[in-house]
Image (tube, rainbow, N blue to C red):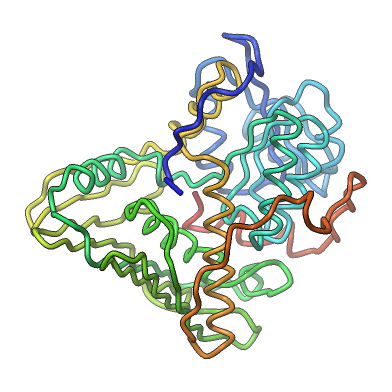
Length: 379
C-alpha cells in the first residue's frame, strides 16, 4: 500500500467557509499545548467545548483557556449538537471506544496515536467513519512538519540512491510512578507510546509495508514494555530497525542509508516550536521549525469543509497497527521472525467488538490523572 493517499475527494461534507466547532475530550496538556492553539490560530475554527469526568476540572480548564462550554462527562460533550469535530487525546485503551462513540454521534474525529490497540479495533473505527461519511484522522502531528516533507523529497528524488538501511532511536525518562503508560490495562508501554512513531516513519520513508518483523521487549515491574526493539524487513534489500525506551535519557533521531549516500534527521518527532536538522552525508541541508499541529488542523478543516483528499488514507492507520500487532506477537515468541499477515478484513466479515450500543469505557482514576495528558512526546 502506498502510504501517501491517492484517493479522490469524497462527497461534500460541509459548506465552504463555515466555522468548524471543536470539542476536546479530556483536559490534557497535549491538547492545551498543540491542538487548541492550532485551532484558535486556524481559519474559521473555534474550540467550543471541553469534557472531563470531573465538571470542576473541565470548568477550570475551560476558564484558563477561554473555552465557552465545559461538560462533566464525555457523553455530554458528544450530545452537544454544535460540536462538529472531536479531538481525543485520552489514554490509549480509550481511543477506539470513544472514537466509535463520537462517530456514532455524528462527529468528525481527530484521535491521538496510537490509533487503537490493534488492527481489528482500527478496522472497526475506519469502517464506521466511512459508513457515516465522516472524517477520521490519526494525530501523527510529526508527519505534517516541513522537515518530513524535505526528507521524503530527498529520498524520492534518488539523492541517496536505493535505500538499504533505516534506524530510529526514540527514548525519554518516565519518572511519574502513577503515569498511565505504566499500566497494561490502559494501553501502556513504550511500543504504543513512542515505538508507533518509529514504525510509522520507517513505513513512510520506505513507501511500502514490511514483509516480516521481529520484536524484543524488556518489561518493567508493572508488566509493560519499558524498552522495545524492532526489525522490519521491507524486502528489496531494505531493512529498518528501531529502539524505543521509557527508561533512558532522551534520544530522537532517524537515519536512512542508501547505496549512494545517507540522510540523517535530528529530532524528527519534535514538539511545537522546536527545530529539526536534516543532513545529507553529514552536511546540513535543512533546518526547519515544527508546525505540525497547525498543518494537521488545517488539513482536517479542508478535508471536512471542502472535501480535500486526505494526505494519509485511513488504511495507513490500520496497516500501522498491524505492524505493532506483529511486533508484539514476535516479542511473545522470543523475537521470532514473523511474516506480516494479510490485511485486516472489514468488520462486516468478522464478529465486531463494538455494537451500535457502544459500552461506556470503564472509569479509572488514572484516566483523568494520567501523565499522558502531560506527556512530552505526543503528536
